[in-house]
Length: 222
Image (cartoon, rainbow, N blue to C red):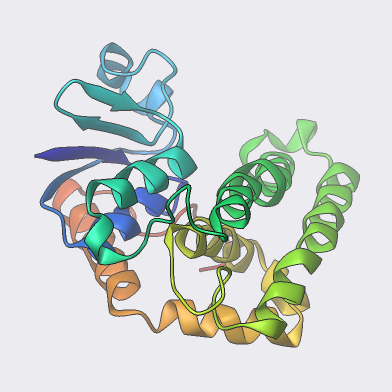
């Protein structure tokens, strides 16, 4: 059994979506955000106090994009992985790493300095600058989406899940209004996937079961 520790709409949504795409059995553990202060016992499982935490037997992982690659490799017949012998392997890995290091990272600074810091410590200029940074880096997605339905042409892979979460976070932040035409169409294709919808439903139900708000933050647009 795979155990996934998750907060609503956090980066842990990536492996949750992957689990639904692969139809792997899993148990979802929903935590209040931030768990390091609101669920102190979680520190015994993950001293970083961050989500995601994925536990699969002796395997323990804390990086969401790495989880996407790991889960895809567990079920290669599903076609969400790309082998090292495949000509698309380099591009696949690049998208997986870009999803978090280049696309999600600047958005976390927008979140911090517009929502999570106390009012006296909020920095509108920092948030604006990093919002622009994200949108500038999103040009790579716009270019790829203009050429093909999916990032690795001809097939949906774990890279689309990893990048798709960055688009979901952008939507929560209101940055989706500045998506290019191709990125907007790509995001619509991602949201239409049954596994994406099942992941949203699993998150919603877990939130209701735990008495946690199903919204990522009370002051972030759904």
